[in-house]
Image (tube, rainbow, N blue to C red):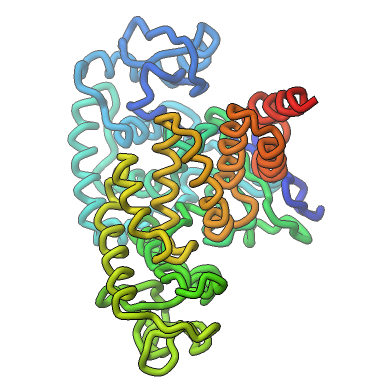
Length: 481
């Protein structure tokens, strides 16, 4: 399938499809082997390859379509069995094979009628990789695997191989299923032209292995220099996002959202003791707690709750402090020593357990400590709610899941924005629970919210919208009648 792209001269509306592309190279994650087709990535009844006994296909059509990519790796996979080749090594091997045996060196990924990207156009970040011990260790490990795996291909020299590795790790996309879970990795040459922003104007979604880029904001024209998607999860502090981007993509994000004081004051905020006031209160709970990193040396490290506005990066009217005492600068309510101690303990406990919060009891215990103490938009409270909601769905505890969904929706809007696939999915999941409970009016409201978002982010032909959301809307309306 050839790339489909939009005319650059026309205006762009939210929901417009601006690029559709097939991968230059891709792999299904090894954890999905035996669950999804290795070619179309669909979850269905599968047939195992009789040669390697490793990959699975949904039928003869997909097996035949994948043969040009699989025929050279089939014998190699069989030879190294029962070892399982790491995903990174398998993707790099596919890149090497396409470059040496296929059209890899001449293939063009078009993003307009006259503009395209080739493999050689991708940045390798060679010098950054050399200075990155973690990446160099990973590269060394992949080299050992490739030398054992690719007996029928002559590997490039170490410098060239490292250039291939750099282009792969920097430019690859995580392929997502309809629930936005990772199922594989792929390299999309045309789509790799798009830079990152924590406040994106476009979004990447997948239908199987096909990537689609859609606008989520109106634009006067399609200028690829100004198209932005988010490379990472956005429900984090500015500093956490910046560090993740710097570690993985070698740049320090300074987008407006990272520098937004309204976000900064909420990340680690306490809730005002006045129940009628929603102003975030800043309390120093941890030494050297950085919320944002600025290029300006004078404000390089932003400290949370520091009494000096110069250090914490917040203007005086949003710092949450008045004089020497911890007092809300909106309503004047003073924080007691006991409540300050409770906030510090809640933050420390949350930070400790957020790394391993799969158990619903741990989630509930965290939320008990956070409720009424952390601000409703505090990032740790939002992350805990997210874990708890998913855990409750797995356990089919619908009543409590509904309670958490109501609290989670404002958090998603705050951190992801009003047109993000994850917000649409949250509305859809919540609506599905309400439909199961036969709360039809509320279910329809949630489905309509989901429809408004997913029609923009996925389009009305995507299976998530067409095969899953619309039938649930129709079922709800029928039940109501």
